[in-house]
Image (cartoon, rainbow, N blue to C red; front, side):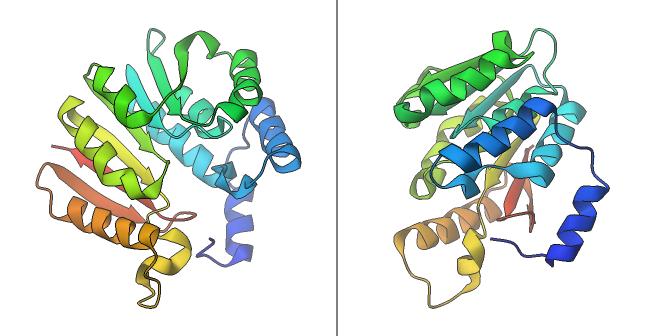
Length: 212
């Protein structure tokens, strides 16, 4: 998953603000108790999400794919005092674990955590949306994009995780369905005139799309 030398990664972490005590606890507990802890955003990406959110100062954030809530808590740091973050995940097995950390957060009253099928739930979300973070099932990225693009405010950001897919995206031998779906999604975004785009090799690839 890492594309940068580990020594450079560690140096970058040393010169980046530390996450809160709650986020550090969530990181530890996720690695100790939850399957596939690599899905957690982690220190550098978490601080990056927080920084972008603070720069935008969003009124409404929508997150597709909650996992254990690390990225949601990072994004919530930039919310306006009256703002709201809607985070959607289909995995009800993680609900009690994740909700326990949301409840301990200073943003508890601003986080609307929904256990639901995102494709169905997004139809009921009303815009304008200021910031979106997509980090769910890769084969449906294009569908999520199509469901939210018309609800975005001009200048809003759509952030999409895992778009390099552990480097498989540039490996011609990788032809599994998820890799091919990500290739198609990346191409779709590149050709869409409604968004400005920049793909960052941060962690597992983060696609930044600014709505025009």
